[in-house]
Image (cartoon, rainbow, N blue to C red; front, side, top):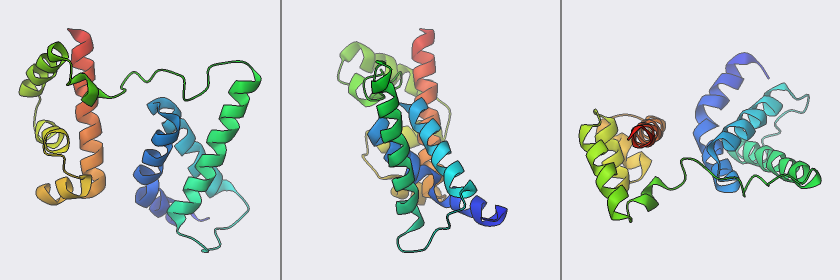
Length: 162
């Protein structure tokens, strides 16, 4: 696969594949690792994408196989599986239920700079899709995903500081 094609594939599918892998691994670090490995294998393999499905589906199949291989490897060596490892960023939304955590999150959110503040609020409180958020800002769905993810990281980081 030539560099130009690989770059376009990466830009078009990275967030979709990463989101899919997150549903499997439930851990951001593992999901990033598996997603990167999936793209590496897709780009560096001798096998060529035949076009029998969408490239996104093909990449997800590669990622799923990598995830399964990792689970087997962990099981073989008696380590915790990918799914059992705690996710440090897990469900910031669930923390909103707890009133003390809710107050802390709202306090941090109040001081959060734009556009992170608004994107986070639209996603969590407005329950808008990333596509809708991107449209509101005149940006792409990927921009909305990345901005939301960065907002979450900033909130988690500031919560840990307190």
